[in-house]
Image (tube, rainbow, N blue to C red; front, side, top):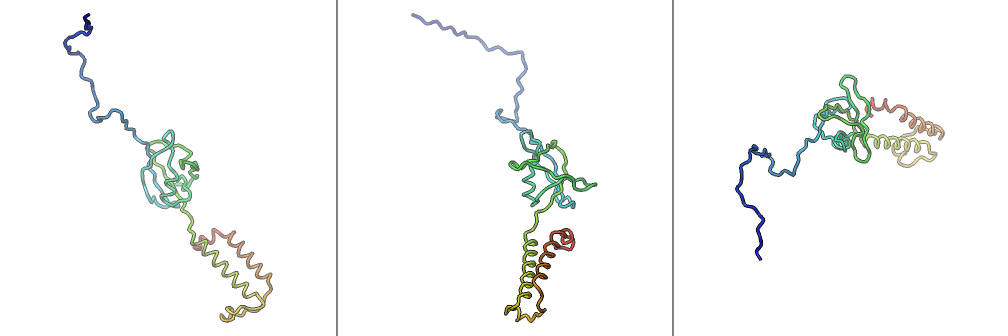
Length: 189
């Protein structure tokens, strides 16, 4: 019982086709490099600047959304707005609360002018509240029939006046604070 060999032996023939072009720069053909879309952002603070010019990557499923939350955290803004150098601040740039990306899309390579509104400082409101409480406390101490010992040491004697005056002063103080926010900002408070 002899087993017949069905393999054929032959010579290698030269092919008439040219050499196959292989990528020489990338030895691992499994990796693919893609360009991440970016926009140039010119950042302003309350219309002054630009305070910074930088490239920002676009994210999202279609790679066309601006990473708004990163900009807000990095520069300490509470909100950002579209900005035009001739006409000033425009509409706010809205973003999704979960992922922090803009709702509107942007094109790759665009130049985006953005104006930011800084976060409010906690020192100024706390100072205003403390000064208001101190004034009200002083007025209550002056209105009381029996003057406290610490007031007697200060030698402040204005006289007795009715409690409705104190109530009017408190009401006027609170109304003034609510209505004149812009005036207080201009004065520097």
